[in-house]
Amino acid sequence: MQYLSLAQRLIRFQTTHDRPDETERCFKEIIHYFKNTPFRVQRFSKNRFSSIVIEHPSVRRSPDVFLVGHIDVVPGESAQFQPEIRGKRLYGRGASDMKALVAMMMYVLKNHTFSPHTPTISLMITSDEEHGGENGVGYLLNQKKYRSKIAIIPDGGDDFQLIGEAKGVIKVTLDVNGKSSHSSRPWEGRNAIQLFFSFYQKLLKRFPHPKSMNDWKTSIALTKIFGGTATNQIPKFVQAVFDIRYIPKDHPEMLLKTMAQLGKPFYASIVDAKTFPPIVSPLNNIYLQQWKRCAKKLLGKEISSVRYSGSCDAKYFSEKNIPVIITKPKGGDIHGPNEWIDLTSLKNFHTLLTEFLNTFPQT
Ligand SMILES: [Zn+2]
Image (cartoon, rainbow, N blue to C red; front, top):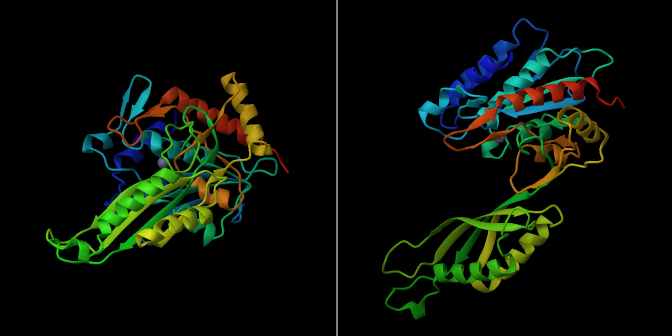
């Protein structure tokens, strides 16, 4: 596997968000890989997050296929940044999410034949996926206007499962404005903490937590709460943050409206809401159909499509109506202490990707 040592090199960089220097060194390594080749590397930076797009000179802005990856990782023990091959697995932070895949895609791009009979492909590598992707893929699509006919993002859908739809995200900040008084005279005040919890109970009743992945409905999680200043004072203010994951058929405006209505009697109002779209991959699309055909031929079975409650950079492509193939080889313990990727599965994924590019439907 020609890209295995490259994958190991990439894992050694501690590309967490508190180490921008390591991210820069990792990007340098990637750029160096394309030195003395005809490829052009475009560098971008948005809000201190770097990204690159690697293009063949024959490609202008909109290739047929965008391969998409990120090099940022969640924090880990320093030993996790020493990649290790044990049995048929590569262990290390980012092995599965997703440096081994970035290395494989770099190899695919570098060895791709650009001819009138093959699709044009470019590679987008960002460093803010674990922070929402707004300054990476979001920026490159929204501000820099990159487009493609199809995007391939091996960052979800483990073991060749294809993600058919994924939930959208709304980050909501809500304020409760009460009235302070001395805590010995609670009747003179309006306790914001108490108001908040009354509201929260109503909210949970209206949007009960889903019980499992198969319980496909919108979830609202309370993730941050601030309130109260002194032990002898009725608190007048609470701020809470909710992480809403909504199914594609629910509309963000309606959800926010319902939330605001529920909050009114409790002096609760939404002060900020950031919405990220859901992912809907039309499985009858010709590119996804071709991917499924290639996968069936290689794996000897029909690949299944799944729903996903998480989010990934694919949402930005989906927002522009660009179909996305979200699927990856077998891996495990993502974000955990023993993150790994199965090397046979990675090799199969490489074969599948190559076969898909070789049989790319020309339209
Ligand atoms: Zn990832």
